[in-house]
Length: 215
Image (cartoon, rainbow, N blue to C red; front, side, top):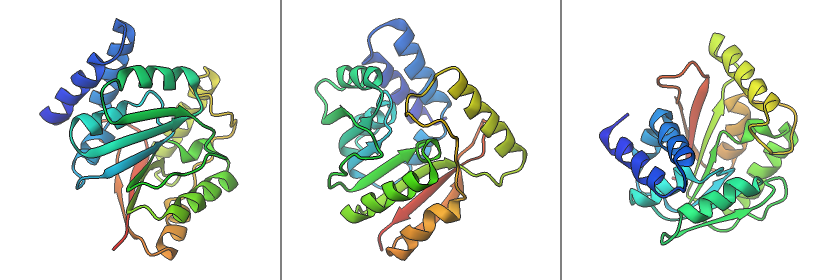
């Protein structure tokens, strides 16, 4: 983790109420390789974070000046309530929404971090189609690649355990990671340039980062 990302983890944690919530936020952001990957991108403009959870990534991007504003949507009312409190005074808005039906507002960047594989395949494709309809400048997806050998086996087992212990409330029972090519095909057809890179530094997981940008 870079010193910048470490400092942001502390700043986001300080906005949460209670030692447990602060410890979770700090630990999550310090361990997660997606934050340094996002900080390395050019300015992201107005960001829509779909499946934002507690809003940790979204808040870090605003505090770092990488996002002009953020809107976060998630089905979990408790997580959204925590995110809204932590966002006080920032250009950040969080709302409860079902991604299977939620309206996609205009934005510059859409984030889908660890979200799509929690939805059935048809719902994944439908969500991507609704995103493409608003034509954001970039779409950033982190998803497990089911063809990464032992990493994929570990990742699938870990996700099943998360579901078993009720870590997510997305309302979907299946874990359905699609091949990265299946996700990028409609993006390429819509004219986006695609880059796929590993996003598993320091973990045994099969996560990859898909960056789709308009020319």
